[in-house]
Length: 103
Image (cartoon, rainbow, N blue to C red; front, top):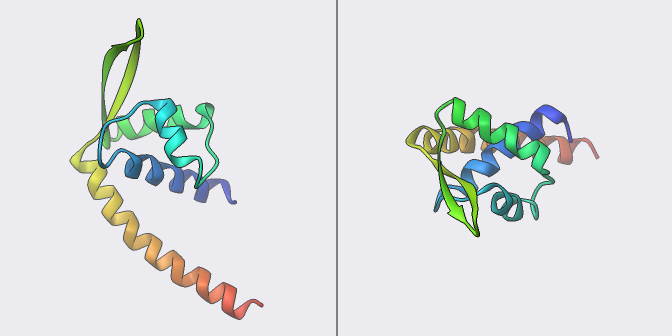
């Protein structure tokens, strides 16, 4: 998969995984890895970028004697999901054309 396309899809997957409830890095990886390959070294820069752009906020909480960082989606992040859904609809139509006509 093209690296830029994957980057955008990973960002969207992270936001969608946080839409219902806050979560932490390892859990986010577990939630989205059945759908798209993601590693810790890929996820954490995405989380930082989404936080820097106002799509996420964070808090820390102690868990088993260690501090764990939790990520929460913001209204800006929810808007980004809605905007991206429209883009995905267009992309799906393009892929359908390529698949149908390219055979």
